[in-house]
Length: 329
Image: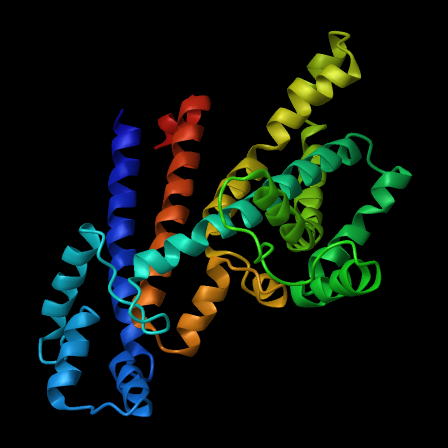
């Protein structure tokens, strides 16, 4: 029990530190979101008076006349109430609404792609690592080449082949704009068709890392005493591979997979930009380009919560399945 209490305390402190950095870092960037809003107002013929500036500051959840510590306290209170401010880029839409409209697109696209790349990479890695030195093993270095290929370059190749040349899939967008968003069969099929190429881009670029890591762990596991003991008992090779070698070799991959799932929330900025996909990555890029502090803070907060939650699940999972972890701590 002490192990789990210490872990919860550690992640509570980590969350507080992340919130503090999330508050400070955007304020160290050049520019001011209030000035951006005032510039847009003046372009439309409005008057940027001091009263208007003060109103915009309050609307965006800040006040330059307050000391930094007071702004920090207001920020923490607003976060606990789910108030992340108003987005400058998508003014006057609240930040939480901007994030929620894009988050599901990213979770479905990047989440499914991450799961597929993990399953394919770990499965192939286990097979290749079970018999090192074969012709399959000689093909492993080619997968690392795919991992080194930039996302945007690979995405452009797929667009050229399957969208521009073969016309099998659309090149941009998240769904057919003539359809009403919802859970209808036509809309879901349209979303799958539009998300196929972005998902394939992420899978191809990610599967090599999982394959190489699992293959190396399998090779190391084959020299363990419990593998020799299982072979001495006369167990079949398939059972030894599945129940002894692969189960132990994939533990580091499971930890990496959980962390990767945490970063799913951040999206794939380059891939989403190439395909004009309506995910959270494009929103983050727009926030950075427009010095949208509130939107940046909101997205970073979601990413922080997802990553910390994934790491907490991994630590708890290891504590449950491996008593040695609890004993060491």
